[in-house]
Image (cartoon, rainbow over all chains, first blue to last red; front, side):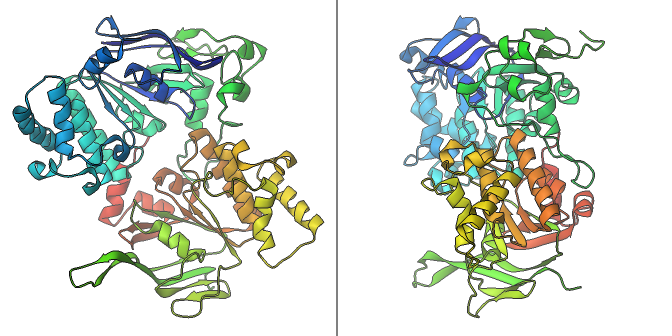
Length: 315
Length: 260
């Protein structure tokens, strides 16, 4: 359904994303995890055609077989919100503060010619009820500031799914929310995905959140893929040193029994990344080869990019 | 044994800006009669969602705001509502969430770290001041090269180290940390948590650690209080509270917590 093929994004001589490829099937959820500067948001923006013009994009983004990379703005407008829905992290800045939320949801339906204004009014109420807002008729007449953070995120979801898109891209949709609300929003996204069969791209820095919703996980670091594979396998038996480090750095249990093993060093500045594997200067296994040459992918249960994978039984 | 930190019926309310029809000001209760104790050298975790009163509690503990009721007793010092406020307690320091907002962007790191020392009334000599700043920089894992640089030259994790150095320079006995790792990347969070644990052991620090992240609180805290809507709804030993939560709200929080 959605296929990203060797997507590379750069600014002058600075490479932000280094040849990323993945595919997304109908009804499937891919979680993208990464720290700051890993390239997860820039991936989302490029799929939606929202990259600023001064960034150079190479590679292909295929939606149902059609390359949408580099489409003109009017053509992109026809896709955005219609075929590709989006949910952002901060619903307060993503919603228009001076427009009633019902009108904002109806706007996409009318603009894309899915239905006329009258029919849209009824559909908005149905959508608001679907995302779990009580008294949807009244809610449609609310302004964003009258809603709580969780309610606003529900409105964002209603807006994103209004035109029944093929793909929903959610960039840190629950990061600004309290845990109890976060759990509700994740459950809602799961339900809607199963109901509509849309594919979902879920971006988060939080592995625990990703593990609750994604079928497969892609781990990014410094603009390069590190490891990709089925969620359970990748979290249960990570093969790549960065994935291993990331999982070891998450507190489980208590300080009395276990000490955390952090990844040494700092999250790197894109300007000072090694030419080869971007993780080379923080990796315990790295040698001269890693700094020089990008490792090829190695496919076992998960696909891992590393020169020093332990050769187990599977591969 | 008398507890190191004893908080009794601590309360704080704010008047809302607009009154009702008769002009009567509405009162918002941010913290309602909070009572708890912390033993010396222990870490108290405070969890709760937004609006639960965690940050208000932090601000009262460090003396950034006066309480409207109740008292805070820290070893031999005390802050009691209604009595003249003794000013910020010298034995208490704070680490904030946002390492980008909590350091003066135009002040060199060395001066930022020394600033609490200059206001503490300890007035060390110039050499001693530099020596203490250097020792502290070393302790939090930054070299002497950081001394004359500015905050923008550091990453989030490094800035949080600087904020910790700044908080510890006056040798406080209580450290209040309000979401100290929430703005950091996962791989950096673990570094800062380890640093806080090491420092606690080394300096015999008592800590109040505020976080919305239950996994982190479970990891670092000896005891936990759970707050909701300005009230403490449950308090207990960390392991017991996580294993056998009694209050319905605690149970809801724990079941919503995403686990790996």
